[in-house]
Image (tube, rainbow, N blue to C red; front, side, top):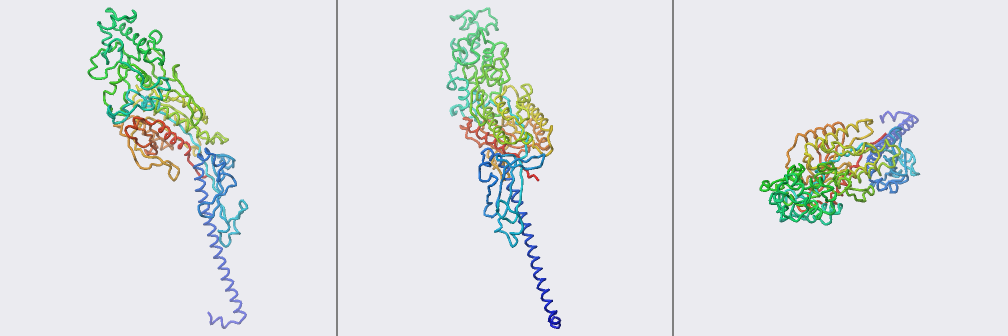
Length: 626
């Protein structure tokens, strides 16, 4: 080629070199431009990826930031705020606002909303050869490229299902509270009674726990146990010759029912009235005989095999101390059979409180509607407490029910703050509150239908009370299935296919809940609670029951239908276990020592449960929107 070039005239050789040089320049410029275009495209992809990730991160924590008002006031929450990402030279602009699902538009707001918009840009000083040519201007800061992303919180239908069975006050049942450890500690090494019992005594105005007590008939020479009634009702009864009013004195011609009436009336007027002056209704055989006769029927039970030979009162009520779940074997299967020895036949505030707890919210003594614990009873004492949602009026602090009440109110208050600034009700989370118990005890009880009335739901939490201990776990499971069906019906009506998530938060006694592994909960990298290694597994000693299998199948079906089902199990072991319908554990309190278990640290349980439920309330799903 060089030989040919030498043969060309000078003018031709000059033109050739000019063309060759021009080709090299054009080719070089084309290569540079192609490389620059690739760099810009790579930059835009990187910036868009960063914007998407940052938008999702900001939206995921929108609830917590709104509650702290940090998005409105903090460095990254105002429209003019720029934040450098790590050591890079990108600039990030974060704006809180509202994403309108109908118009598909983002509206910036001064305060928190349901979405965040993130704009990521890169300073021109970090760009290449053509960095100052391509791009636009943002905030008078030149850059090579920008990327914008909007992430919105998905509105939810959250149905809280709360166990209202008799198991939800077992932690403050005094006749076996000293034995809350499972397996039990020896009586010689028994820890002091749970703090919760003194709180309940305070709420009733009973003074220091456990208060004074005496066995039935002691002032008239009767011995302890069931034989006390036998001694007082026999022909040689101390009441035949005692200097007593005629209406109390036993006569040879009195039939068994008359003798019972006289003995009970004497004990009510002289012994109960003296030992329990603050009890309600007023201990009086003339005005409230039926109620206090039911209490005495409840107490007079054989506490051992030997005492079964003693004579029991005629026409004794079936609501007896040994006919309720005392103790609850689902919670503490290892307690001895003679756990009631120190309570059967003993009159005092301690056994009176046990009587009220066993009756619960829905069971009344025979022939009477008097029940100091029930919300329907006029003698139920109320007290005010400050909570995260304000001051509320509560019934006595039965546990773990009271911890659940306060924790629910805190979670609902968080939801109220999170949703308060959304102008359209369709953008807000909707909540419902359903209690459940055995069908004969109320089944699925609707306290608040699906609505955005958060305050009304908080007020409804005041009415949550444990029911009678007469119902079995199988019957409570039937009530739970009914409540799950109600939740399914509510959340399946008038729901856009992809605009609203369906959540069910189930709070239940861990005696009724299926055994699940328990581990420490923490927030994972994706913002969802994750297990941090199994630390404790509650061993109830109760085999799987068909009723539980039916409930598990229903929950599994709901999960397949797109529900997020969270279960919180609260029990005497200080455990709060949380898992979804697939069985994955999410949260717990760590296992306690035996004495700490017996103390049942209610303040700590309430704090952990509040943290758990409030975390749930602020952990809505986040998605990128076009």
